[in-house]
Length: 141
Image (cartoon, rainbow, N blue to C red; front, top):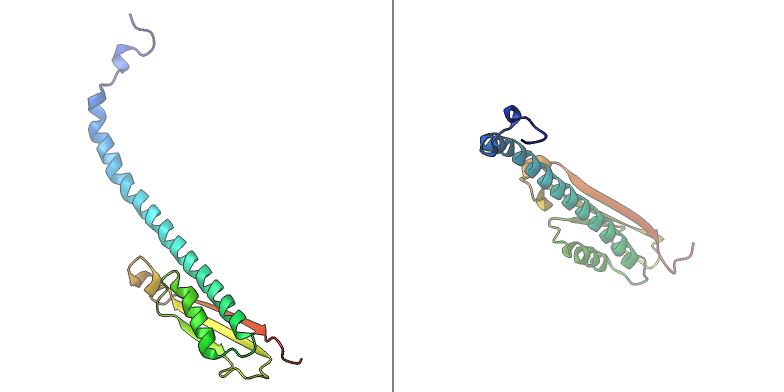
């Protein structure tokens, strides 16, 4: 005599194997899509943060007396290369930086499609643009 489930309610373990395979086949693609979407959004956020950092570091180079536009662009490209960001557009205003330039702006634009893990059609027109303006050191106000 067994206590608990009556014999009429017992289910053989092997009889659910087909249902389990169907459930697995339906759920796994959704899980993979969610996983890869999370990885892709993380990549875009990391690229965005790197562009923020590159703009800041390049602007810091630009405000030092004696800095040139080439110095600023080199620093921005160096920071962007740490993540492998490709096809950035780095614009420094004014060009050239003179001794009396009161402030300098650095703008970096990066296409998301070129720096994404997914096929480019999903981010074909998306760009990350960051700009920072700082006052120069040693310039009379």
